[in-house]
Length: 197
Image (tube, rainbow, N blue to C red):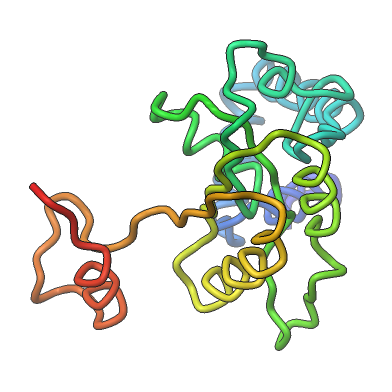
């Protein structure tokens, strides 16, 4: 223990995913010994982010304003709505630059064992949006975990009377993957989702 303030800094750094005690100490020492101006800039950016970044009222992704830039973009295809679990999923899909539709963030996935049911997610708002907007295809891009699959099935059942086409993102073997190292569930999904070449 160096000082109480140093210990507090280390404790706060540990809230980040994957950051344990030693890593937090290294970060704190690095900022204090070599990067004080950057540490101050980081603290200011965190303060602004924690106060000013909010959920978009349409899609529930992160935004500086009530409605995020993706929801405001007139070049986006209103007929395509991609449902994801988190804002991180929106960011991942956007980095591919291959999707030009709209998004809807659930805020997690169904997990009865953890006490997370449909009322804890934004599913009612999603169904309300499907009733009001001209969505032609609902793309379910939830995770490939059991919870993600369960969530996709639940939404599919709830949405089928409000949208003509419901699809699920393809699942299976990653590029460069070797069959012998894949788990049986991934290999099974790959066989079911095979396509023409």
